[in-house]
Image 1 (spheres, helix red, strand yellow):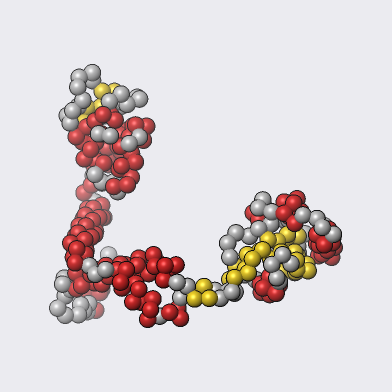
Image 2: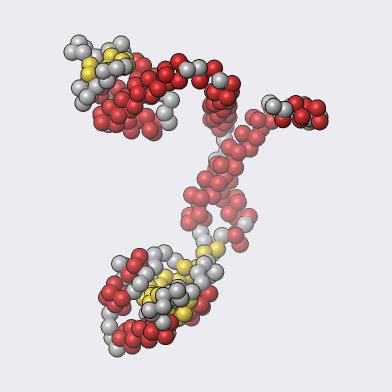
Length: 295
């Protein structure tokens, strides 16, 4: 959508009735802003943000209104001399320099990347040379019912919570539905809503030791006893077990290609920056150091 077509009919910003063009102005009653000026201001935004704003009339309206208000604040700041403060001038120059450096480096990397190697080939070479690094870890998928133990709660003892957990375990052994009991009784509300299921795979050394030891000792479908951890008592049900095994290239290709591309671009940036490096070490003597720190 073209910017000037979005501007036509902005909710509370007023345009004259003539045809909208680059010099067409809108106003909030105190400040005027042309379409040309608005488009120029939009250039300061990241491309994805700019595209989102110009595609949404309400967002563009808010942007234009905020811009006009900010211009008045900035004019007031200039009026009291803030624009001439050394700290403000230095910050402005630093910002411009940072933008120039960033854009120059990005453009140079893009230009030189036209001769980039095939990253898929590089990724495959790394995979073949380091196969032992690409193993799918032993892991389990589990559901659990948690009966919390709060050592600071004087009204509920650990013994009472253990008894509650044992009661739940007894119901499960008698044939009660695990998911239903988890939804009703588990005090881990996140997993309770999923029938006790903890999302994703749990690998070795990724959870508290008592929970891990019990979970990896189970067979699919089996229940643990009431396991005490620092969170309370857990009744664990093993849903699925995955043994450790080598990964295929297709499973890791995407991440390896991304890594190869990132490494290549980082090296390009290093080489570009090196062209602008000094020819000798920088040294600050004591007199200079004292001068910098003087009031």
